Length: 345
Image (cartoon, rainbow, N blue to C red):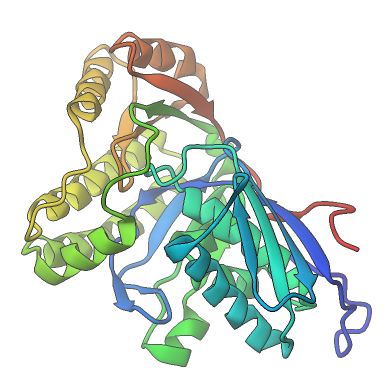
């Protein structure tokens, strides 16, 4: 996968603008914990499903101004949000050997900061758009490594379908080279994810802060990380065998284990709300009725339910019956990040 035409790889065509679209991914084997904070290197590998809903569209336009300008969902970003984008652009500028500032305009169509991978789609789109604008000639693997430096899970949104993120080995530059995402075969499973949004507000504790606190203080974290490595191996085998029920079982236990490790942090971190638990109870009831439905939850209160495409209407209806507070969206396997034709000069 090449995100910039390269008729002459030694002298890539320089562009001053790029627009890219990327979709969120939901991890079936979670990423939770960094072994190297500066390089965003994970403690364990992970595996996800890129969705076909909630895309983020980002334009990066080089300017002659003295500072980067960042506009997120129509609002000029300041503080932490601006700093994260600026640091990412500094990395891109360093690799490109350029120093122009940029205007970044990004629109996210899903809940932001609510545990539905908005940062994954956001930084995947930013990586693709910025690489184009600054003239970096990169393939998919290299672009995933760049996206990882903005938000770890963004490296998986570079690709569509099922994607594995290799933890890699070592720290620093060695770890950076070996930690990347790549797609894996599994589209034949053709699963659905019913996304049950119970709270679309930004969460009070960011994923970064919660992750750092869990790793540092939770006695459950290390056992979960060790079990997660086993889950990843078993998940890959289940996908290869086309056993959707096994995929769901592994995903559910991995997610609940991650939330258990957060509950044991000091102080405790609790993203699950009573509404989240009500959804989990309904998923158990569906299985008792013979529907192979399995829940997974990222760092937030919202629940996604894995099932066969043919079971989607029944699962969607059952989740909506839980209460008026539930808003559902049905997702399937989605595409990887892509430049928008005509979105660059």
